[in-house]
Image (cartoon, one colour):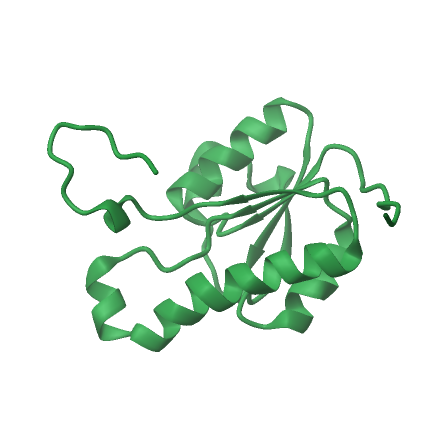
Length: 147
């Protein structure tokens, strides 16, 4: 069995940091002493209104990364050596998923595959969280959704 390479302790990459969940996760991790790297397809063009509203914009390092581009993912994970990666970047609008099916597929399937493959290839001890949609369960009524 090959030996895993260590990662930077307490460094987290959040894919999808500009959204509601990404910004609140960034706030939580910052309070726990993490160095937070937030990714966006085009950080110069995004407003990051949620990060500004929470007062944490200046505490987060922003990086360009398109999760549907393997090289982009590889470059960010090589550069920042995170201990944790949170994927919140998948397209989550049901309406948009019908209007933009290719972008939806790429952001959810190809993006997740790229993140997992880069983590595997780097052979680092990186914890990975992949957000998914509760929509995959359909209407469960008042019952909780599970596997």
